[in-house]
Length: 211
Image 1: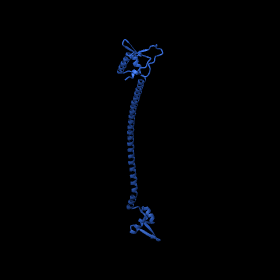
Image 2: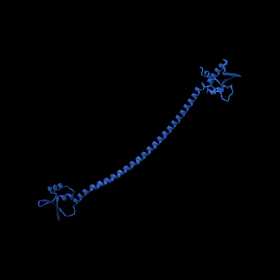
Image 3: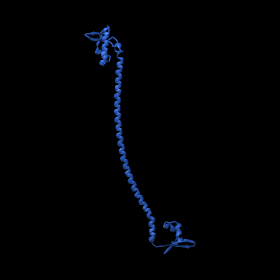
Image 4: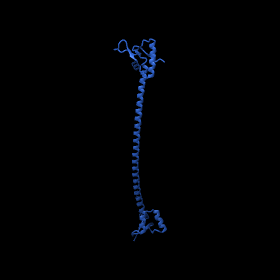
């Protein structure tokens, strides 16, 4: 048994264009019938032939293939992303470790530089104090303490200590000058048992700075 359907309905059922339906009619590969001036397709009301079933499979199969490919692609993408995340974590760990090591090294270098700088500053301060003491000692009078007697004579060791004279070479020069001054009756100097004493009341800049 057969029935008549419009070309557009046939095209929708077969998943083809209406133009393709008319082309089949023109070629004679598709049975048609004209009723009241309108063309109808003659379709048998039987189970689809193997050819029609195959066409339907071909029509559906591409969609299934696309879905399978999408699922496969999704799984591959997830796998790649997981590996990338793992690599990034490992790389970040290495970077953090390297940075921590460099920071510790910089701390050590800074600490060593700071210690060196502090020591250098301390040495500079000490040297400056010594220099100021050397400059001020010769021009200061050896003052008499309030509790000392009217006559104040000190030994050479005390004299050198007050004048901040430590080098033996300079001490020898000063002793030589003091002896010459004593021979010239310099009242600032006296000798007892070949021991030189100097007065506390006078300046000795002329002897200390003498060339």
